[in-house]
Length: 289
Image 1 (cartoon, one colour):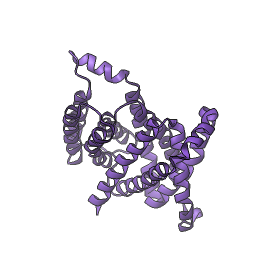
Image 2 (cartoon, helix red, strand yellow):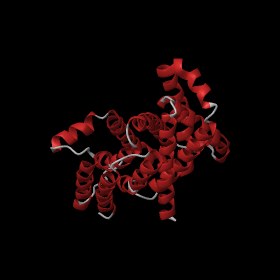
Image 3 (cartoon, one colour):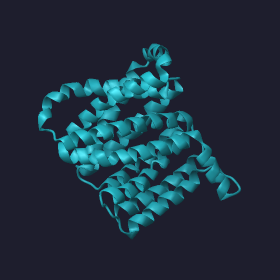
Image 4 (cartoon, one colour):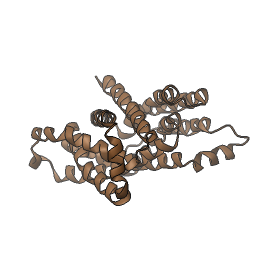
């Protein structure tokens, strides 16, 4: 059952990224894509409120789910911004850095201490990213190329925000359960996304809404995929350590490289697959540590 949940999560995550990237290619602003996805999420979750006794949920749950929703909403904005500026086949493998950041945060805040194999796995993940860089004459030029790329910068910001958000998210799951955490994560994210939309791209709202009329199906698919992905994530978090849970999720990077090649005609497929294999090896080292 656990394997099925993890594999489902990997598929939902990869294909949600495909829809997000397709929508950015159609000219939609990243903030509008996030806001629209949260509208769909709210429509899905509102009927589910009848399953819960709101007064039985502890203050600890409410505090943690609020901060998790806030951090993840911001992380999702940067995620979509990254997809709008970099290849999916680069975006996917970079997700391995979430293991690195999350392991460090988990060590600091909740005492999850990996063994030496876990640390070695993190080092392998970092080393594997070298193969993602464009072929240059020196290692320094490859690193500079990577760090100067706007899409990569946005991806690292999203990883940092998601990684920090993982900590209150797991606490919310422990206190409220997987379904309640998913539902209120979605519902609390909507007003936060709406405020972001209002403050930063208020003038573009009408333009985006007009274009959205011909893309309603894509937004619905995106919202449904995010809901299923998030619920699978909560189920995994309820059974595994944070860092190891995220290591499992990194296996989707191979699928994202393939989808980037097949759907968006992205290049350097073999180099990026090689990077994936190295990063997956690092993830497996963390998993088995």
